Image (cartoon, rainbow over all chains, first blue to last red; front, side):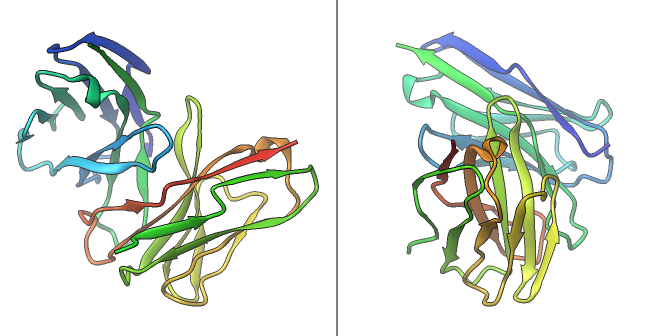
Length: 113
Length: 114
């Protein structure tokens, strides 16, 4: 119940394409869903996040779509660029006072020039 | 602003050796944690701390010890290194008052056990 399942494991798109990365969870107590972006040789960094009270959040070219009934959320990257090539992790957490973020297994994205 | 600083960046150990990965943060964050990252496994929580003097186990704690004597520092000790501990290790910190607070990661420590 604590798992966050992420797919696909890897993704290759052409420049300008719209890669979509999906995550699914079981625990309905999760109340915060961030996406982290990691470039090679670096630590992950927060990209965008959403709470269950909204169905979509957009920041620049990055959009999270959230489906509470299906317990799924996804990251869309509009007009993808070679500089977006990175590994993306979804995560989920509970505002319970404990420090428990559950991360997905990651998606390695390559955007071809 | 240095953020989360990890040392060393790279380390090669022989099986059975012990070592300490250092982590320091300058953001006065209550929460600190250690993750390991392995191909296809994502980020797995090793140990975490909700404040000085308080630590707890995460998902994969075996073979590792931690302590939190100050708010700033959270070292990770490998007691007797094994090849299965070859991984990339990330230290992270965040403020305590909401699950929505951003986790800040260090740049990672690449550990190889031969």
